[in-house]
Image 1 (spheres, rainbow, N blue to C red):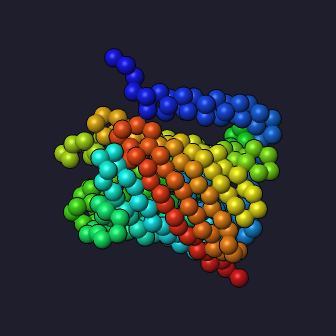
Image 2 (cartoon, rainbow, N blue to C red):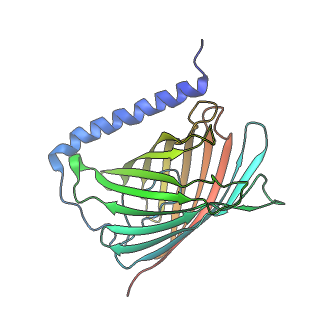
Image 3 (cartoon, rainbow, N blue to C red):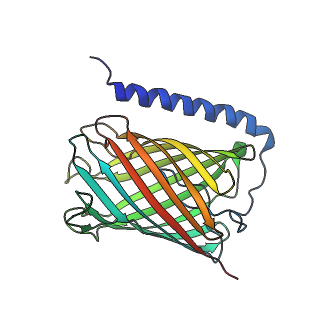
Length: 272
């Protein structure tokens, strides 16, 4: 039996990213240092855009709201849209934040739509007080609550844990990895199973701009396969506490959407 072309692309890309991580880990072993404050007000850590979330928090006393809109085109030429995708982040300590998030509204169309409310998730992110081999680490355990409409809700309480790992490459580049594990009912509504997902991204900081490229496997199964996608996008800082973003997705196998586009904004309030 021949291997699907999309699967070959995913495997080759993942091997490239894993090899890069191993090289960086070896290089960083000699210069591991104590973690620094996650936010000094100069940078604005946001979970948008892209699949990966950084191993950072907003900072003590900071309140940050992130909003977005996205649309995608499936292989059967139908469309899906979602917004405003609110993510509410509150920094409760230097290395700890609380998060409340939702897709908001979802519809199987682009403009003239029948919108349905989505589930809400609550989580906490903790930046770990160590940097093994030069990696900044964070953990984000959370739970998705069945508060949405019947059409888009899972109708179950779904736990999720994300491990984030970041490694700086000089003054401008950063390599990021996310590992996701969840218990969901993606192929049988009567049976919960544990699924894993992975995300790799390489980002840069170029003045106001923060472009990135990425590769991800979603923590679910469609026809027995994990959806695989590539991403490219950028954030742009338009004010000290305002950042805009845009990203483009491309499905790499038949169980992932053919393509998707997303745009959003992050707004921050810092204590004076």
